[in-house]
Image (cartoon, rainbow, N blue to C red; front, side, top):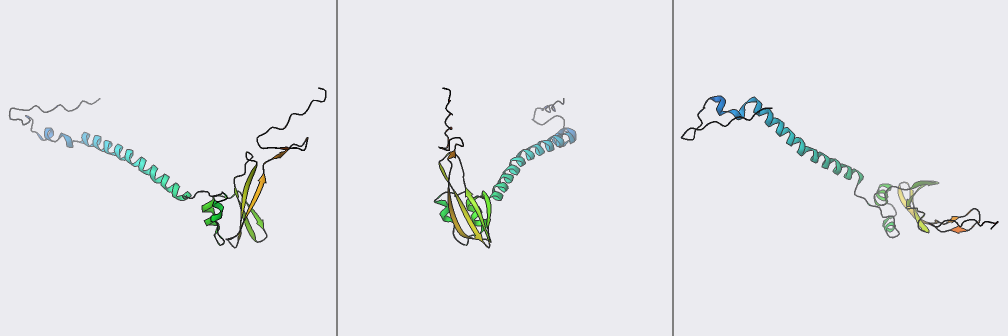
Length: 166
């Protein structure tokens, strides 16, 4: 463990008693420089890490875009004939699936679920890379009990089978 340099003793008029070059320039010695450069490097790294992280997050944010999904009955109305797949993708996000219909490509958008009784899926059809049709498909989330043939609402359990011996 190193000990700090002792302060120079002062004489009556306030000047140090040792005026040799070694005593006067202790801040410029080799050992001092190493400590100073290590300290400077540590602060540089400590400041650079958050900057690099911020630039990385900013780059990822820009790469993914600032788009948001408008897959709602009102939001789907912003689509217009002639829009490209990139423009629609920026508004609606990634499609659920692609369905080919002859020379048309139809991408399906929506949020299917089995919680609501009914959900909607939209088909956006393109010809030569431009929107031609937007179709709405409504699906039921009801299940059919294979034993009885009755419909079961989403979130409900099928009725328990009746015991014929009881």
